[in-house]
Image (cartoon, rainbow, N blue to C red; front, side):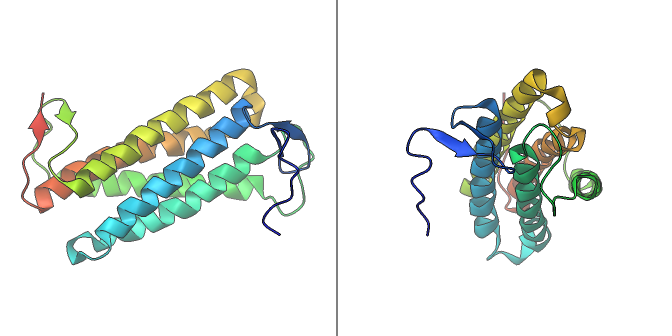
Length: 189
């Protein structure tokens, strides 16, 4: 059943069963990552019909999976033992590997772009603009995760912080790549 009525009082359960307020920094963190995933989905859907963007489209689909991993790590109760089936070390290694994948993608995209000349104002194309929306939500996710880290340092996996930071860099670079590929001009400040 989709509705349980257990959240009607403004609380939700973490993975492990502990109930917390829906406004708890942990819920804010994984909820904002969930929002980011929806923006990534919209961006991927906009790229899908264009063969020139097959590689970014495929990478964004991988990103969506990593964001679910991050949500899982953020939704865990802060104190072990964690529920069986949650492989924290495996998830961390997976995020670190995918962080390297993002860095390689950034390097590949940057190699084909003109040199960075200053502050880029979002716009110029709907797909590039959606990239910037995803980037700004990614940055908000990072702020929410850092807030949680400040409150409960041991409950935020360092791989999560690295991955979210790198993802925003990738989205910025991808926005520039989209404009260049479509022959649109960057708007610089």
